[in-house]
Amino acid sequence: MFSGIVATIGYINQLEIINGCKYFTITPKDDMADLVIGESIAINGVCLTVTSFTETTFNVTVVPETIRLTNLAELTVGSVVNLERSLRMGDRIGGHHVQGHVDCVGEIIALTHDNSDAWLVKISIPKRLGKYIVNKGYIALDGMSITVIESAPEWFTVTFIPHTQDVTITKHYSIGSSINIEVDIMGKYIEKLAEVYIHA
Image 1 (tube, rainbow, N blue to C red):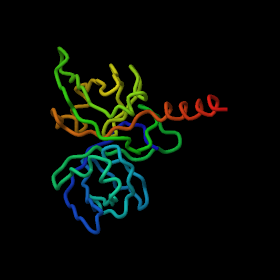
Image 2 (image 1 turned 120 degrees about the horizontal axis):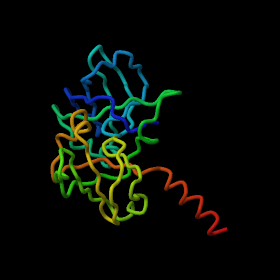
Image 3 (image 1 turned 45 degrees about the vertical axis):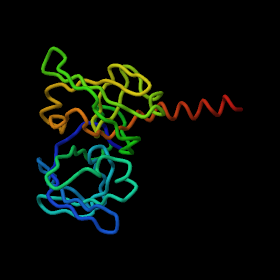
């Protein structure tokens, strides 16, 4: 479980493809010397497992299904990624509960300055997910907990403040960029529970 508050960014410095899996070696910008093998870490909002590490790097494996469903398929050597380690008991939750299970890959279809240094961004989504996105609700974008401004059946808008641009990969976004999207899990649970009573 994660909170959607990106701790630091990382750089892909090695990539191998073996039997359909991608093996990434990542160098975090900030120190992660206390990593342990088996620890969960979110890479662009995708929950992966640390398989090995050194003083300056760590390794993860991305299986074919994850490659197919996320923007990790687009990563190459030199790519920059958002990193967040899993929550510990007692940690503050500055964002919202994020599972690291991506629902879809969206695309930036508009990006403008909202009369300030903040970016107003419009992102496309599959229509099947539109019902889970609400105005002023939470959404996880490449692992970042962001507040929705306006939602529609096939798109929504958000703002990236200057601080977010400075400390995450958002500074590299442009029209056409692919973004991992995880909708707020609460809406899915409510829908499933409601179905039980509706069809009882």
